[in-house]
Image 1 (cartoon, rainbow, N blue to C red):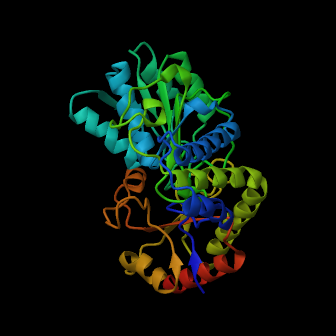
Image 2 (spheres, rainbow, N blue to C red):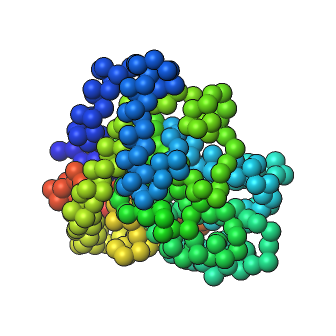
Length: 376
């Protein structure tokens, strides 16, 4: 048996999404910037996808900009905000994805901003009262905090964070890569200037994403070289990917309640089975709290063992795909900055199980039994 439990890294392509993409890939090859009929047909397809995504998120089509994925969208929001608005200060947490953390650290090292970190508690939860304190009486600031932590699964109260930023006229960028397609986002109600999506996190194709930009936060371009995306991003659009992303988001919202119930039950079931089979198992951050963490992510802490260094390899031999943390480091094992921040000096092994609509209880049973053999 094989069991894929690394859906926070990437998800399988939904067959319905592939069906939507194939006709465009086969028959509609025109450049959407071309004025002839081939280009106009593809432009129409592109704009229908934009309207679809905007309608799902309760935004205007003009507020949705297509990118190559979440990392580019995060970089655009951060780098272009600092450049466009002349910001000299930013606040984030030490538990952010590297697409945010490394970008802000680059700006700080270059002397363009002063970077401050909001406090997080022992469970990895952002201290929003500390955010309010940091913003009070200070110049206009960029705040970048993720909605769902990709390693711990902790959820940020995005509504409260947005209200705090609005009170202090801060620019609020929220990395929603892990929650897009899994939780509803009403962009007319949320007080966010920027949110992001990456199609392959919700059963769409890789290499395509989007940035939502609120009307009051119009940025100068991050990528130059053409007039695409209303002069916001140079480069011919990935039309096939964009069509697939729109379809994937449509499916995600259509089936969200059913899939959430199925996946949350699997997560609860895995917690029960792990507790039964492995002495000393525990769960990182708020991962075990079904109300305060991503229902798609379970971060497991295992007892110290001689096999810890080979744990992921051993599971892979048995056909079980999991992660030890973020999967965006090209296979390099440098440890998790998130877990190192929360549990400095810990020698326990950590495994992130992340679920999708395609996982089953039988796969959970198989993975737990194989893991228990390594921790007798």
